[in-house]
Amino acid sequence: MVSDKGDETIQFDEQPGSKEKLNVRIDYLMGAEDVDRVAKLVREGNIMLLKIKDLQKKDIGLLQSTVQKLKRICSQSGWDVVGLEDGYLVVTPQFAKIER
Image (cartoon, rainbow, N blue to C red; front, side):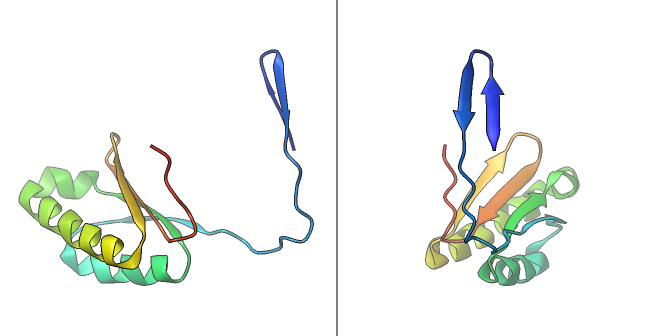
């Protein structure tokens, strides 16, 4: 793969032995009942992009408690979680680290 960025060209070597797919799932986080489902998907190796804007508009208190529950599970499991300005949360399993 070659990326041309202005005057700078960066070449990435593809690894022919790597056949494993990385799944990125987009889903909604509508309340505390969704946390267990999201945790199961992350445990299976999925990177989750969670839409939280609807919950944020509906009930900010429920959003805060739901996010705290998700953060606790992430901390206990060694996962990473970060909120984005656009009303999304990103949750990654242990093998993926979010650079801040």
